[in-house]
Length: 148
Image (tube, rainbow, N blue to C red; front, side, top):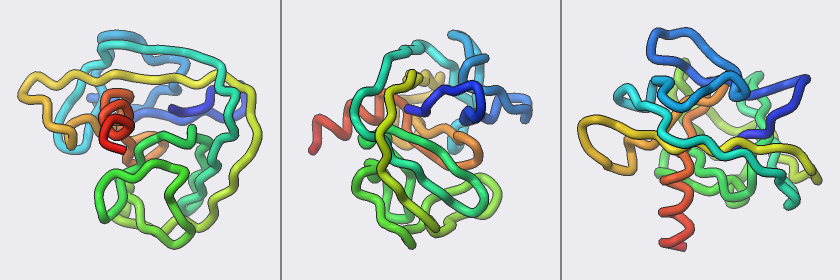
C-alpha cells in the first residue's frame, strides 16, 4: 500500500513503459509486473491509522504500510521487518541496499491493488514496480498475513 498525497505519490510502471501516479490507476489498466504484464482487477482506498514506514532506497523515498511486501534478495519481506542495509529489488539497478527506514505517524489515504495475470497465479507474479522498487500487491500481502 502506498500513501497518496498531493505532494508525492508512488508511480507504477505501465505496460507501455510509461508511468502513472497511483491516483490515476484504474481497474483494467495494465502494468508491468516482475516478469510479465498484469491487469489491475481491484482498487481499494482506505485511511491508514497505524504508523507507516518511510523507505529510502538510492534517491527514492516511499511511505508504505507496515505490512507492505517488499521484494528482497531473500524473497518478500513485510516493511516492518526490513532493516537498513537490506537489499531490495529495483527495476533499474537490481538489488540495492535500503539507506534509511523511519517509522512515522500518518493518517492518510492508502491504495491497495489486486493484480491479475493471464498465465498463472504464482506469488512471484504479484509483484509491481512502485517508483522503481519491487513490491507485492494486495493478494501477496494477504497470503503473507496468512502464513505469518
